[in-house]
Length: 491
Image (cartoon, rainbow, N blue to C red; front, side, top):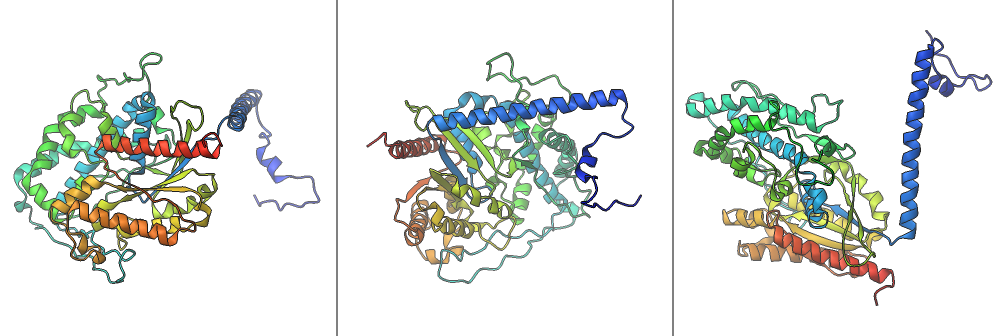
């Protein structure tokens, strides 16, 4: 049937025609349609009423403290947010254990999958993460990425024990697919799933599951036992499809695989540093593969789930006063393709921006831009943020993050000067390197900020809960004091 050309002179309206009921609609179909439309309108009206109620409360009450988290992917923004929730809303944090259990299990399976893939393609090219920083240093030269370091294609050089373990662990692929499906919406269609490559001839590409920030994935797991009980979660331990059963059955094989000297040698030659990747749990396999595993606070803080888009988190902070007790923390994506979404939040009456720079990544490159050094990228981002005139009255707080990984990397013999030429022949110890980087970031603030302002800088580590809690407490006190000053309640 040819499409009709709309003529403004006639009474035919394409929109009205599109939403009109079909001419052959039966009485039952009409009744069902009207019922659905009524339910949809009731839901819409309820949402509007709730939004209006929130607006009224916000106008009458004290202004919330607004904090924006910035930094590249895997800089530690989500970990900071989980720390903050743990400190100020521990009941809600505990209520999420069942959902984070699935995420941690997926993290473990993905790590094992990377190892199995490396065994399948021992000669696959792996680029070194080396890329010399150019933003910090005066020189614009950069060291080329190293080529592949091939391993033997001959399967006889892989011990029979590892081949048997690899075969037994293939059962984890179904668990990976099951967990991915449980964490994604109902219209999930093969996003994030992978299949273990057959014996050696095919190239396999590892992908990462990403969840849109608007998807309420935690609600799929957060069912509580009884009213008000936030500690005991409903987990059907007798469910034959519970991924924990397969992980428990494969536990010893996973431990043997990870600790096998040949595997460690292979990963080193392929430059696969799993310990530095977010969501690394292979050092906790005995706990995670236990029959009735529930995540500890530490495990939840370390869990990795990539999210896309912007998420807003409302947290009540007790401070002995209603002023500034309502916190709004905005977590935005750090991937290069998502940074355009940052700009609208710069005009959102921000109290502070917390910028996380993972200094341990000085010898790594961005996954989305393999020629860009991660430290260089953090320096470039920091420069653009401190120079932004819209943010000239906003407190900027710098986290030199992942200091534990930084210290371990330096101790292993990796030298900062090989990636930051301007560091020269200074000592390659933790104190000297971090002091150098701190001064560089401070100098950028001093040189580029439109107005003079205080340089707030903290050393943080993903594994040091106590020190991170102290840092968060000091930041909270500082921001709440500023809020009181702006409200003329504190002189």
